Each structure stands twice: as structure tokens, then as C-alpha cells.
Length: 327
Image (tube, rainbow, N blue to C red; front, side, top):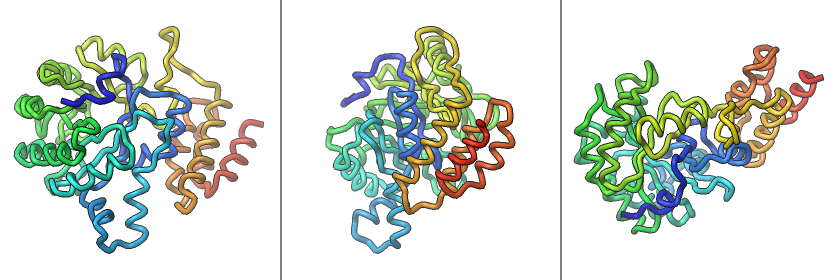
């Protein structure tokens, strides 16, 4: 088993969870600078699509750029893990080789996405019901990386209910790390994450030597640490709690919640917008707007400011609006 960087991280591990449409390169850069999580994941990217890019098949320039943009990263983000999804083992094999060449610290297989267009094809969370294909994909990724970087899986506690048979299967796969989100596919993002089930899965999977992390409903670094201690897991990933809140990962000398002044929050929002334009100069700015809306919360006047920020078309506009708000 190649634990790679996973074996070197101090416990408990508190990392940034992969989120489609959220954890892009500018967001991860800002999070690394102001929060410094222990590990970071890219957005998930289609292994089948990337295989077409690397295999020389004809794709439109827009499609090619859309796929490769997910794999942009800065050295400050390390350790950074590329997350892949799909349903064809051969695609995973070819793309795993690309991930190694690009210099990622690890590769993660998405077996938890609940989106109907993904799970409906038997990918993402759909793999929970297909152990044979899941095993073939894991084997293909391992073959592709040739032991050069660790292989991990992020999934859910089950498809319709918590599924110990799924956990047992994962424990046989000689994985470096496993992350389990505490909801089933059927729940999507509704209800509460079942940390009792996460703990049970962790007890089983850790026996294989894999690093085990839980995920779901973590709103602070302190809560992550407490949950890890309570449920006996090696670490936790923070997802939605990090949106517009990159400092959530910051290690504090006391147990108080990290709270920035409004001026500091909005200064970081402007910097994030600048970074977006730097990294993706040809992308439409509306992609950045959702991040701006997440920064504009938790202070007087946030709602009015948010209405203005989500109409911005450039970082210059963002800075001008924030400056007027702070006058």
C-alpha cells in the first residue's frame, strides 16, 4: 500500500472537500493562502472526457479548455489531489498517467456524486451498487499511477441506506485513503450527515491500513477536530462550510471560532475576484459571482451588498462596489 503524503499528515487531518463548480483553482489558491487546509481536492473531472483530450480525438476548443481548467493548481495548494469520475476503467487508466505527469500529490475516485446525470449512468454514487465495476476502476487507476502517487476514494455511506457491505468492499481494495460522506445517495444533501455510520465505517476500513476521513455538516475546524476524536476517524473534510469562508481551516491557539472583520472578509473577496481573472482570463465572470455571494453574509448590510455583487462583470466592479460599501 502506497500511503504517499497521507501517511505524513498530522492527525486529525482537516481538508477541503471536492465540490463541483466550487473548488476551482482560484478558490483553492485563496483557501490555501488564508486557511491552509491539510489537503485539498480539485473539482471532479470526467475521466472519459480527459481521455478524449489526451488521446488526440477531436474536441471543440471550449470542451478541451473546460476539462483541463479543472486541473490547474498552484504549488501553494500542496498536497493537492485530482478527483476523477466516470465509468470506463480504460479511461481511468489513461488519465491516471496524466495526473502523475501533471505533478499531483494523489488521485481520488469519485464514488459519491448524487447528480442524476452521473449516478444514472452508473458513475459516482452509482458505483456503490456495482462493486465489480468499482473494483475494476480502482485497479485501473492503480495500474496507471504505477505506485508513484496514492489512490483514494470518496463516497457515501450507502445508496439507499447505510451499507456495511460497501464499506467491507472498500476495505479490500488496498486504498491509501477513503473519505465517506455521511449521507446516502437517496438523501442527496438533505437531512443530517450520519456520523455514527461514518464512525462504524471508519472502524472497519481503518483495519485495512487506509487513512479514513469523514465528511458532512462540518462548519468549523474545531468541529472537525471534535468529530474526529468522538468517532475515531483520522480526519474530516469541510465542504459547504468553506464557501466564502477560506479562513475556516486556520489553526487557532484557542478554541474560539475564527472571525474576521467585515473589511477583511471583503478584501479577500476582491482578491479572489482578481485571482479568478488572472487564472481564467478568458472565462465569463459570472462563474465568480456565486463565490462573491458567499462572502457577503454575516454582517449588517450583507443582503444589499450581495444583490450588487452578483451582478458584477469584473474584479474592478467588485472592488468599486466594496469600496463604496465600506465608506
